[in-house]
Image (cartoon, rainbow, N blue to C red):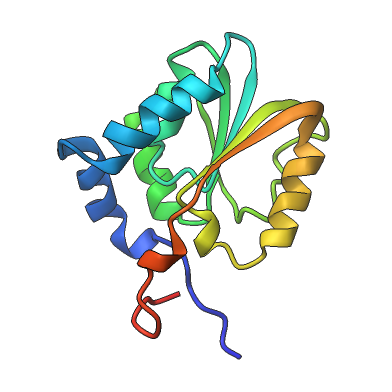
Length: 156
């Protein structure tokens, strides 16, 4: 079986344009306000943004005073994230199942937004998140509804 490329690196420019310059996006109008309400990031908390894309949610969380460490497997998206962000956010090119940049039991919260369906090693990803979170740490996820995927036509 061939390993599929689930990275969004090839569409990094398009994705960045969508999130930064389009009004009425699902990310801007639905996910961001509800994520911020539920996550309620506090100054001094450490939040991991796994599969962060171009850093859209990382930047919003960082503005609250929380420390953000973010990663994505696509070096193209991390490059764009660094261009948009202040030096306050620490970015890494890394797959979701290898958070070697994160120390054990240090993160207060972790997020995976609209990316879990693109991650091949989900079990390894959850193992890494569990290792990184403090004992009472929390994971927040937003999933794409599987019924909206077109069988045999979706690339993943």
